[in-house]
Structure formats: structure tokens, C-alpha cells
Image (cartoon, rainbow, N blue to C red):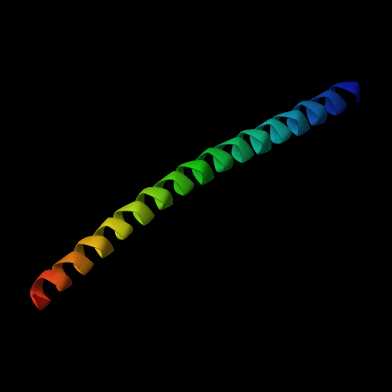
Length: 60
């Protein structure tokens, strides 16, 4: 009976460890996504600026 309990404890510890690893990976991916979104925002701002300059030049 003790060996079954030990096995159950080990399985529970492994499950908890996998959950912790999953949370860590999720946090890392969330951080990367935030960085990517920031870069996209910067690129979109540059595009908007260029389009605005282009429109001004066409009106001249």
C-alpha cells in the first residue's frame, strides 16, 4: 500500500511540475507576443507616416 501511495505522490509531483513548465512557457510566449505586437505597431506607424507624406506630395 505504501508503494502505491508513493507512486501516486510521484505522479502528482510530475503533474505539478508539468503544469509549472506549461505556465513558464505560456509566460515566455506571451512576452514574445507582446514584443511582436510592439514591432507591428511601430511598423504600422511608419507606414501611416509615409502614406501621409505621400498624400501631401500628391496634393502639391
